[in-house]
Amino acid sequence: MQKPRVYIDGYNLSLQQGTGVATYARNLSVALRELGAEVGVLYGGQSRTVSRNPLLREVAFFDAPLERRPHLKDMPRNILRTLALPFGEIATRVPVTGSVIREPLQNRLPHFDHIWNVKGLYDKQRLATKIAAGRIPIHFLQPPELMHWTFPLALRAMGAKNIYTLHDLVPLRLPYATLDNKRNYFRLLNHIAKHADHLVTISESSKKDIMSFFGVPEDRITVTYQAVDIPAALRSKPLHEVKNEVEGNFGIPFKGYFLYFGALEPRKNVTRMIEAHLASGVTDPLVLVGKKVWRRKRDLRFLAQHDRLLSMLDKNVSGGPLSRVVQLEYLTFPALVSLIRGAKAVLFPSLYEGFGLPALEAMTLGTPVLTSNTSSMPELVGDAALQINPYDTQAMVEAIRALASDEVLRGRLAEAGPARAEIFSVDRYHARLAALYGRFVTLPGG
Image (cartoon, rainbow, N blue to C red):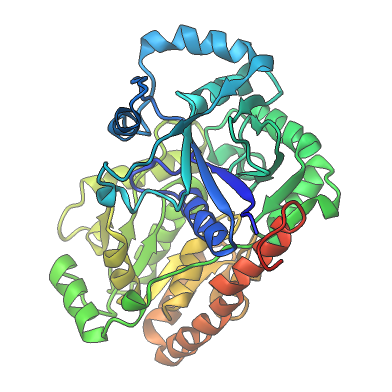
């Protein structure tokens, strides 16, 4: 039986340090392989070399940083091309001969059977959302049967069914916590909601939001959730080795710290979390793993507080209150897994989440979790985590104190977490994807 061709976009896959959406896309590519699909990935790299020599085209593609923004002199040309939306863009197939050594890029690359590229595609679609409500047509010499866009993009594959994952509606639910142009964002999502062949989302909470904001019928949205696939070698690494890594590499006591990992941005509620940790009086330090993604000063008070507090972390003075807070910008995945396993508890009191991967990763590894009782978090964690109102700093203080002092509570959560995480196992995720894709293509054995 011939494999069905299913392509995904590489919009987030070029980011060196990754995002939740990048993880989603990579996991999706692996799932498609397991389901027996022929997987193509569409990039928007800035490669300039055009050659009949397949090797030179491959070298040029991997030589141009996939995330590099176009040069200023390219902007007029991009504007003209974007204005010509009805004509669309032609995707060029990138030869993959195996001559280029790709091992250093393995953490960034998805599974693929072949790669396609449209120069500067994602910058062009970004510009398109500002000047038109439609989607740029993409023409493939070998079009897919199904194009799964992993993000709401102003793009559509010609000759294929087009489905779009809408992870959440953060810019509309928490407009004060993002820098998106809300008008353009709403217009794009409204267009996609009306014209896509199907919509995909990652929680029942997000599904309800999409139905409410855009009037989408329930049968046009499929909830697949997400899955965490942590290699067995990392999950089962002996605890004495994990202890040596945590204490040797980071100088913090094994099971003697609280951990937050993720973007340091307003909707993650980092400011209240730090304030609650300091107010709790617990001596266990709070370790933050992530980068600041908020760049612009805003007038709203809590956003200004957020910026000031994170700026203070950069000037952390030994002996001061913030000396109980440790900030790490980026870790390899194996190091992060050890840090999660070595934590007394993971704190994830986000204001709004489409899914909440950090909480699932911590539960999978048997680390107690403190999280929010809002958006998707209750359906994700169930009774396997402490839930608090993320706007109630005092409730957070009391929960942190309980986790610090109550060994029985931590033991119960550590036991309940992996059992709850099984609901979102890789096998169950693949089964949900198989049901989704089976509506559009015939999968082997389907």
